Length: 298
Image (cartoon, rainbow, N blue to C red; front, top):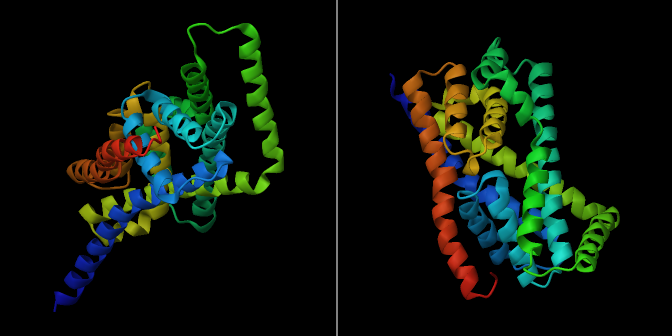
């Protein structure tokens, strides 16, 4: 008599595993679309996907997304973009990506509150687990984006002997490229939509990882876990360590534990999620970077 519920639960877990595997793939596909929209030059579809995997590997070595930003600038310049346009494109990705994340967070919170989709008391527990003082800082990812863009500008434009007029020309070109975005509203909209998609699909991958460990009933707390994922990721990435290694894991474990799971389930879920969505793409990114170098894209 119990075969039916067991079969349904196994099917739910299988669906969660598939969703967990698909989430990173969709995340990097959306990242490639955002890069294409911001670039202003045509990019081969396969290359832009590989470039985002390579950028993920670079991000594991540098804090604040500096590694990915520098790699994206190099890729765009190798594919026909000017230095100023490439810097402007990367700056747009950073700033609009941060704004898209804030928009998604506000929308999720508003919908969950309006329709009662967050279990009673879950919100305060989630915020308590990730510490409110640090959360205030993490709600300003544009600050990290600005630092990343500035660092990229210094890395790419630095020369042993650089005259002041040359620096002024670069700055003028960069500002001109940024102003030109007013006439590329469709590209700005695509960057926003694709950036929001990267966050949503990875958040759903996080929920899928929890459902794989704790069972499909976890999907009832989807909104709570999505909100907690965004808060925990922002908090972890705000720390001055490469890709929030350690800090993000700790924050996400707190988020899962606050949703009502026992601690060992929370640890297993987060480890599983980080292996599939964080470390595996980085490993693939090393191979992707090597392939792009052979093509002359780096």
